[in-house]
Each structure stands twice: as structure tokens, then as C-alpha cells.
Length: 115
Length: 117
Image 1 (cartoon, rainbow over the protein chains, first blue to last red):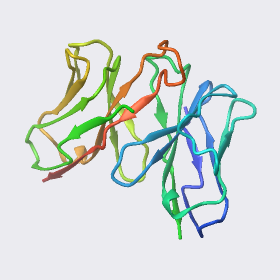
Image 2: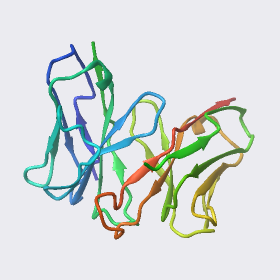
Image 3: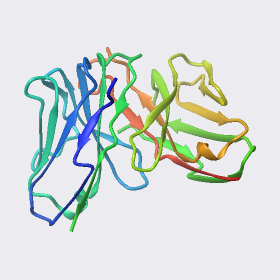
């Protein structure tokens, strides 16, 4: 079974430019998460989807960040415009139903560098 | 918001030694999880704990869910070089708690483990 796929793995952009990250969860997983991981820190949840519905986006900076999961499968996270402080690793994770006992499987992440 | 304090921040040990790390919270969690993250990869689940007082083992790893539900520890026995990595604790809110935070994982800052052969 394929794991969570993310692309690109690395991205370097100049500040004020837009950037997008793509995630394909494990087949059959209804719940998808986007996390932000700063250097030396644990992941922090940005947004959680149940199928195509964003059920928790309280930590997403909506002035510059947006996300979509139109068909309830793969998802895109966008930043426009990017700022220097956005440099971090963006992790995607999925779980089958989002239940207490469900394991969240993480992708390898996209490392973003904003110059 | 909820905060997890994980300690120690880093450890340098010799192969064969035992390792212990812990996590404390300012609030109660219903689930405690321990993850390991290798460079350039996402975190991988090691152990999940669902009941206060629960003690669970996975090979050389043992973890416990504190009685107060505000803490957890992870022990690694007889460390080997492949144990090198960053270990994260995470607490999870109950799924049916209501509101928008249900099911949310809150991670600690991580413990960097280095094992010298």
C-alpha cells in the first residue's frame, strides 16, 4: 500500500511569490491533515478535512493561506504571498476516519525556503 | 492554548544504554502518542496509549499514560544506532468533545536522540 505522497519535496521561492503544495493521502483514508513544522519544533495542525469538508481550520492564517480538497481525495495547500517566516516543513497526514484509535500516517513533507 | 513540555531536548548516549524521555501537559488528554521522525521524513507512530495508567510495549520501547492524564513517558532499552532520530510526544483531544478541536493532535517540541556506537 502506497503511503502519503507529497510534492514537491523541496521548494525555494522569493518572498511575495505564491507557492502550492500537493498531497495525495493513503487510498481509502477519509481524513486529511496539513501540518506546519518549524525547525526544532513539533508539527502544528493547520487544517483538517473530513472528506471534502474542512472541519477544523482554526489555525490556518486565512489572510495568506488557503487549502482545498475538492473531490475528497487529494489536497492542495497554497500560500500567497509567501513571507520569510513561512520557511518550514509542510506535512500532510491522513487517517481512515479520524477516530480516536485511528493512526495518522504522515507524508515526507515539503521543505519550503523563502528568500 | 494547550502546551506540551517534552524533556530532555536532546540526549547523547552510548549504544546499549537505556533512554527515558517524558512529556507533561497543562491540560488533560484522552490519548497519548509517541512518534519518531527521521531526517527528511514525516513522523512515524511508535506507541499509542488510550487509558490513564496504561503501560504499553513495542519491542524495546515502553510507554506509559500518566494517571493524571497530563503526562506520559517513553523508555527505550538497550539502544542501537538506528534509534537515532527525533522523538515526539503528542496528546489528542477526544473525538466527540465537540467544537472544532476534536481529534486534534498537540505535539511536544521533540527529543533529539544521538546514539554513539
